[in-house]
Image (cartoon, rainbow, N blue to C red):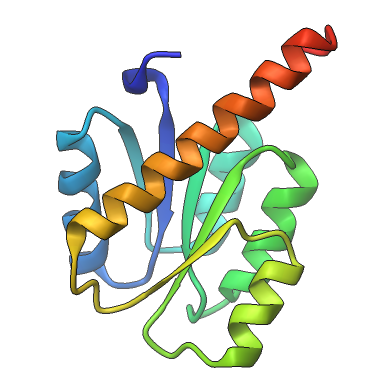
Length: 138
């Protein structure tokens, strides 16, 4: 899969986070879709293929962990990276127990670290897709 076909969905109620992550990841060749409202993001996810989702934990309406659960119910292969400026040990553990693949602390002090985590998620997804292709499931 060419990276330009790799869709990253970013869900955060902060426009500055959405725009900076969009620019960063589009510059690396990803197709990026952003939503400030988690309800809209979940609806988009249900109707479109998303490879990697980056979700803020604390948002109005639907919190990030609820969004994570809904996304995992729809497509368990989607790689989920949770993000939070208000992380606690309990939140991080809850995210991983719900199926998150990684966790980023905001503010992002090192944008190359963000890119490395997205690239690692991409590699993991491609490995899983390879397994399913060998099994004849894809």
